Image 1 (cartoon, rainbow, N blue to C red):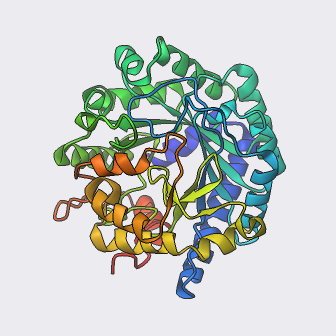
Image 2: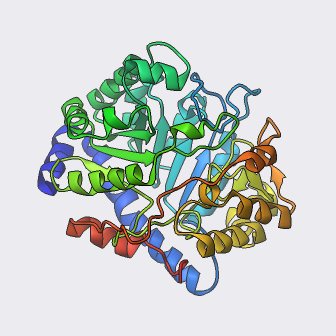
Length: 398
């Protein structure tokens, strides 16, 4: 399957984009994780993968969204983004996840990509702004992949995303991306309303037919002002999603991302192990996108993001507390412990709505990916090798 997947990539993607992916993301990303591990030995935690929500605005209104998409628009400026990336590059980082809101609504997004041809960017998008013109701009930049979200059938997509004809617009974005030769991914937040429709072999075959190169089935996080906990998966369903990804990797010529399990199938939290943290559209530095509390911003220490992150007592406390409590998601499983962390540090609410603490108080404990005794190890040797050396616990859970 790996050879078939590689063949698909070579045949269907722009060659410059493929080279940027292999070199900027693959080779440089590997080196970045090695530097991360060396820093850990000195007690320094600076994530090799930074996720940046560059704008809060969005054209959709999704159930369960934690971003203040209807608030007055706030975006990270090109100047601030360039300073952040330049500083991270000094410490070996080359990969940045770009989120929103809808990041393609940011007027300077293409400029951000063009300013850093030696880096790689993963753009999390609903796909609606991807016209042939936008896809061509991304192709010329060459250093970005689009990860387009599909949340279900036509009716489910409209219901979940608060607009009409959502799926058709999303599929048009996928098709434009594939036509332009972009490395194209599709992500699904798996919940009760799309589990049966999308977590199956027929949907994976449909993605391959569309020309999609990789997919990511991540489980729904019941957080935010409209948490909708009734959409959350049962432990058995989460385990099914994990088993499905492991099996499909060996049967289908398409990549499968799952960032919440190691090579042995043990759960992990990327923020708890320090491999990724998040920056909000307001410049706040947060443990992850769904933890909307912060003590620092990207403007502290003269914009030195490395100094600010490595010196953050709140981030350190979050990592320690989360890792001691669970290998899964502390926000879902132990919201009480998250409240203790933010209270200890007097962390500020980073939402525009100013309701993050009230939302945290109202949360009840839910299951996450942690399911001890039911681990499903990776079957394919390449996934096992990559996860063991570049994406595992890093001693956080020992």
